[in-house]
Figure 1 (spheres, rainbow, N blue to C red):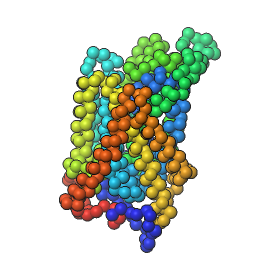
Figure 2 (spheres, helix red, strand yellow; figure 1 turned 90 degrees about the vertical axis):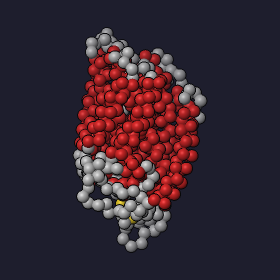
Figure 3 (cartoon, one colour; figure 1 turned 60 degrees about the horizontal axis):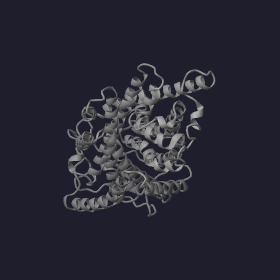
Figure 4 (cartoon, rainbow, N blue to C red; figure 1 turned 90 degrees about the horizontal axis):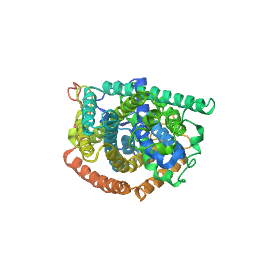
Length: 500
């Protein structure tokens, strides 16, 4: 049963065990964990989404990213504190179940699964945009289908394949961004100091309409896209449940989030703003490709397009990984279809992976109907509010964890959120305000997608929770042993999860 953080501890400190962790193999190494964190922090939101938002807000876009980055850091430190307390593939869903309520766990879990699956479709749509750079007449659904089937196939083999894909793709995009930043600085210096024939200039920050050519209002308008840029950053919390040494690897991964955000996001936006006037960018292609194409160096734009293509592959891989682990965790607690509880003899949640593949296939139909670029923007509009609800649940669960620690119901760790609980409240107020703005921002032609998503979240998850609770009461919980395991699960099918 769930621990009650409001009750004082009596006797030995209880240990919460999550039945959703049964069947996995802890085989992710420290380097793979670091690259998973990078893969979550750097995705299609940077490589494709920044272009349209830079054109709308101008160089002032960097301010929106700076503010959201601070809140994201607080959220990640809160998640990291709970991860060190108890690593689990259920991550924030498991913490919501332990420290708040089963209802919040259900809501949080389905919000994330939906978000991650839909964000995966957005990455697939972006991938099609990149491929069409080389073959503009190629229908977008073809590269999307090939990528989805290949990535799902690799993830079905073992978690090591997931780690290998993420390690390779993340390494490529990190190296490319570093080279891009260095080249951008060199071009600015060459143009402004040595008067070389280049369009790069620091004057782009205030020329061409100024730092904020349309005022500060566009910064609010683009907040949905800024939030979406960080949509998979919490994936590293899920990987803790399969980490070989989470106590060593997780603090490093989460602490480095600030450096990655500062260097990759803020640095990239700054360099892009220096290379070209902001109105030269658009959502039709990666802003990195636009900037490099302006240099008229044969082949360099195509190379960068390959890099952003690997970023999209990394994004699909990361969102698939997190969504299936959370879905399987919920299934182990009777809050998702029983078919998704199946873990293969390789330690892979195969049932959940195949279920998410079905969502990807529906997304590919959307790409076929609307076109890759339009599909990306439509999906983004509906995603942002899902992301915010997920982050809010992490901060609320962390407050519950701190209350449990204060009452002796859970042990404290050295890796803590600075300034809590005040920083929790500050972040929650900001995220709540942004969520309300996104849902009622009528300047966005797709604003009602976020409003509809918000209503569906509240109504749908509450109805779903009541249904799942009655279903578990009648039929009990499913078995959670991996297929082929010789050791039986120590939890009987109808036994409750929680304190043992």
